[in-house]
Length: 419
Ligand SMILES: Cc1cc2nc3c(=O)[nH]c(=O)nc-3n(C[C@H](O)[C@H](O)[C@H](O)COP(=O)(O)OP(=O)(O)OC[C@H]3O[C@@H](n4cnc5c(N)ncnc54)[C@H](O)[C@@H]3O)c2cc1C
Image (cartoon, rainbow, N blue to C red):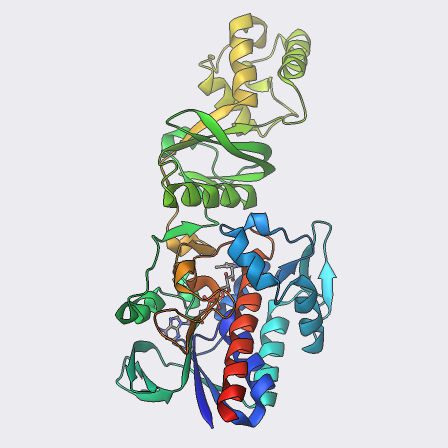
């Protein structure tokens, strides 16, 4: 009987454990060690409590390392995810953008189904067990927790997640477990997170949402490196929203590979209109509303505070009258509406991030199995690996696929050892 220890009861750990047990049945004991009082806390928070567990339009180019991800998805892809989830009793509901949720739209349904299958198969959960150290003694691993309790294992799967949103469990302790095995961990950055600005740049806009096209620039050469449309939410010291989170993942990826280190972004508040169309629209307003104070210029177009902000940025007197707006003022306003520039000071911290950029260097892993080159019979899966994807089900899909690949490899090895 082999002993398999899975460190971390998140998406990757649960899915890996149940697949190992399903494949090897009574040939191995499979135990999940979880530092929190319950497994799967992060799953409950995903997709705003609805769990966007994959995406029908998955594109590997939306991951930081497409070729590595491709090899993993060749073993376990979107279709297999849907059928495996159906087998767990989860029926998919797909939205217009391809995001897949459980039909009941409850993340708890995904966690409950995973746990039920673990229970049915005989996977053991040990919670309040924070692993502090892994050592190798002869053929065996010794896995020790923070209270000195030890467990023996023939196979160890490290599924301890990254550093994002640590109250949900993944506090970064997984990286330290791999240090004694001399595994290279790439630099870590918060991903899918808001952008921090100087608060003065967004004064008065807190809480306002505006649909925009967002462009990201490398400050050094002023080259645009990314753009996407979506809803931007202004905060007291920055911006957030899905489109901004995607942008900040680009910032972290560019920083990580040292292609850029200072950035600014530009918001186009009227992406469906060209500059000259915005100009005509404002001219018509000036003609019609000339007797009114400047703050009335944008009524019906933008939130009142966005209008005030545009006037301030264009250095137009807030107490003046619309009829006095000059051609030069108009040009400045058009330029601010179409290209409102903000310097990005930083990202929000890991506490506010959905994912970690960086992690176990993929060159440390056997791509077919996710076993560590440095330590046979030890595997790394899920977010602890230096793989991250965009919003929309990409990161959970990586968790399921990497978990399945390692599970399959371990089960195969156990069967071979049995012969
Ligand atoms: C708010 C939020 C919403 C998200 N929404 C989505 C979404 O809708 N779709 C999507 O695809 N992705 C989403 N993500 C990202 C996705 O949830 C993660 O990428 C994914 O859950 C990672 O799975 P994992 O199992 O690798 O790590 P985790 O889910 O972080 O699990 C790791 C587990 O290991 C435990 N652990 C850590 N260290 C130790 C230790 N030393 N000993 C024992 N246990 C340990 C942790 O407590 C945790 O339970 C979201 C993330 C957040 C924060």
